[in-house]
Length: 171
Image (cartoon, rainbow, N blue to C red; front, side):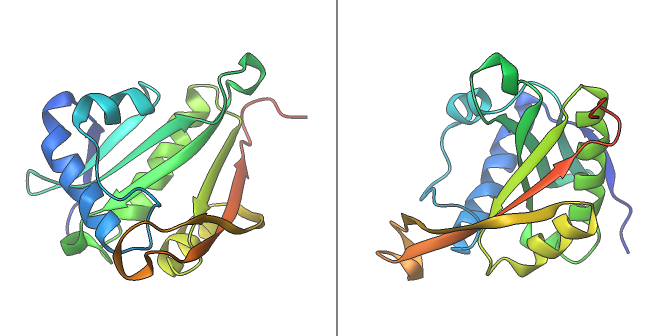
């Protein structure tokens, strides 16, 4: 298995991060978004920290970030997880390494709840999240219609998973 090194995401990682995102989009099982945005739009979507990239042999092969779930102050400690791994690096522990580090960094930053919205067909991602303490909260049936790819025009369900921090002072 390759040695995976993590580091904070930087603006110069943008082209590779967006390429990995676009490859995930192309699977039809990663997001409702039809195309990766440009870097400024992508950058504005996510919390400034934690943002991580996974590197193998100096190549960025995955990334993970948190996005706000609400602009309301009472939800400042709740974030949605985004994690993507390049096709050539899947099955090498990159996703587990990224998500484990993202959980640790989120707790250190004071986040108390992480959530993920996943297509059930993305079984590997569902398994990974569950293995790292996320629990299934429910299914949002026919939540949105795909606009691209082999599922274009079809309504899709998403599975909602949640992980509560064990360190953020939740009583």
